Image 1 (cartoon, rainbow, N blue to C red):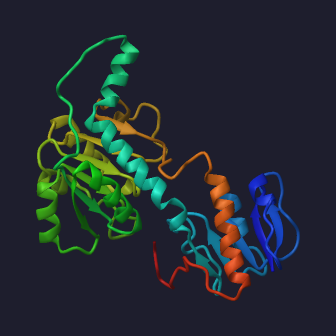
Image 2: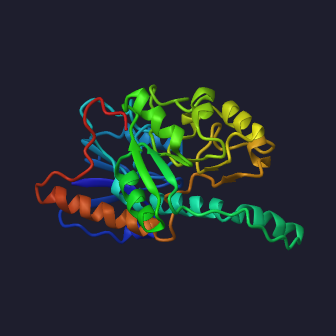
Image 3: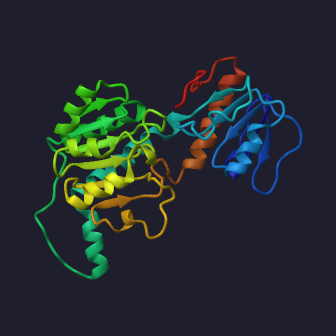
Length: 296
């Protein structure tokens, strides 16, 4: 079996019996057909070129989301994703953002730049906090486990949760964590009406996709003071351009879509690939197969 993989050293070190690795990257592409493709961190033009590679029977995208691949695969090519590679890192990043916001670390950082020593009692914690995880899947369940020692009260809801049940949960939340994918049903799901239903002073954390939130409505809720703040790893637009008003919001913490990033991410991706190919070579179905018509 011949498999296209990224040219990074961690992938060049891979050895799986019965597998020939061919390496791709911005500097060049291998010749010849390939049975499989491990797709990761490729620019759109290279991604599209790889997805049309002759001979492909399957593609493993080392991402949780599949929106960058869905609709671009040739007919008959099987798609796998790798949510397990990222789940815990995203959950940890989400918790870190919540704790940073509760303890006012963003405000103290601003004062540090200004050289101001300004103590305050206006600081919180998560003990007894009602947290709604909107998009209660793999990451949401890990996040709930991480929140438990802090005394948070977690409610998990999904995109298909009945509106009345969803709105009742949101009305009691002091934190709403978005972990939903971007689909036609979820784009703009957090609009002015939803934000108005939140408890005054509630915080929003978006670790799903930027277009879940209507940015104009978010800015209005922040400016009015109704929304306490937001922790955003994803934005709309993305990347967030210089001069965008979100940058100037004092109670917004922004990270550049790196929730799953860790120092060992590339090595973990290579290890995941080795385990995936070992399963396949043993005649077993690897985890992560995307069903026909599945959008995330």
